[in-house]
Amino acid sequence: MAHYRAAGSIPPKRHTQHRAPDGSLYREELMGEEGFSSDSSLLYHAGVPSSLVDVRAWELPDQSTTPNQPLLPRHLKLHDLFPGDGWRSLDAVTGRRLVLGNGDVRISYAVVGKTSPLYRNAVGDECVFVEAGTAVVETVFGDLTVGPGDYVLLPRSTTHRWVPTGDGPLRLYAIEANGHIGPPKRYLSKFGQFLEHSPYCERDLRPPTEPRVVEETDVEVYLKHRGDGPGGLAGTVHVVPQHPFDVVGWDGCLYPYAFNVADFEPITGRVHQPPPVHQVFEGSGFVICNFVPRKVDYHPLSIPVPYYHSNVDSDEIMFYVDGDYEARKGSGIGKGSISVHPGGHSHGPQPSAIEGSLGMEYFDELAVMVDTFRPLALGEGGTASDDGAYAWSWSGRGPKG
Image (tube, rainbow, N blue to C red; front, side, top):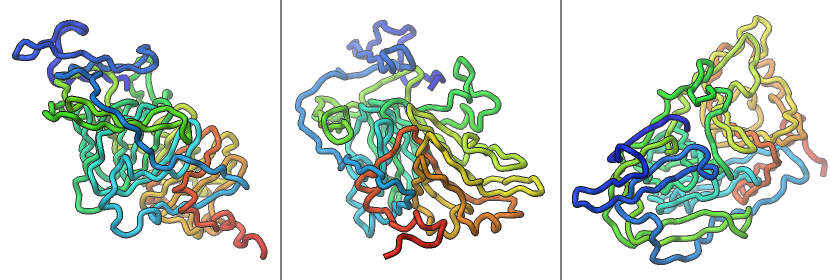
């Protein structure tokens, strides 16, 4: 994030002494990306950020994957992964179920009701979409109060935890990168300011509250990092002598923030617009788009639903959040569904949806799409939620026998 912020108590000049009221010296930490040649922030700690007193292994949720072979479009019913009231005992870190993944990005789903452990993803940034429920995301930078429709952007190695605040389940769609996630470069000036054609701008981004110091000792922090487990991942629990929320102030351009999908201004036209107009974020090897309620094509002969298309370089993953998704009518897809349209398969609307869309002026739909430039494999959650019938929905019949 190219937008500078400062919070709490910081010295007038960086890398100089900053002392507490009792005369003790705060510890300065530089948190920076790409070998300290990109965005960074300086944090001032009451304790020593490197201190450890114990360590143990953390067995991550199942990260194994199965190739999408034979190649098929699929319908994954994510709401089926968390039946009943089991969500009450689950948290947003250890309760995730891997749905899809490759070497660039992993997509997980969680339905939770319990406060998570303190957690740090040392593999890449996380973009977590809140499907339903409310929470406070407590971070070393300060807190974010989030709810339905919020994207929560958490830079790599940001220590944080999820604290559900509502009576109902907190439903989270987690997009974990192996690198960084940010606004598309075409939306930004060469200095990082949002340009006039961008569908959102700096005013729409919600930064964390002021940081706070928590007095607690021998605190566990769950750490996801690179290793020799499935997906090249491993887990460790660090026990630190002082609570990591000991920051009295920070400044810089690297920090967590929230953005609500309702603040995305859709780009429309006389005829159907291509998917890139819906893009909201990008990462290495993938993009994130959202389809929001909007006025649709107004040419007198327009066809509002998409044309059939072959996204030859990408797998296209659509998570259906709310509303009526016109192009998928008749396919069995509904709220909480994912459609998997792999590269190599031409996809488009269900046949009956084309005529049915003629004359429509408005689409009341909300969906989050991830397009990847390398094939995605199915995680255990994807395999468990596959309806097994979606591939035949265009023809109306499947294999004989």
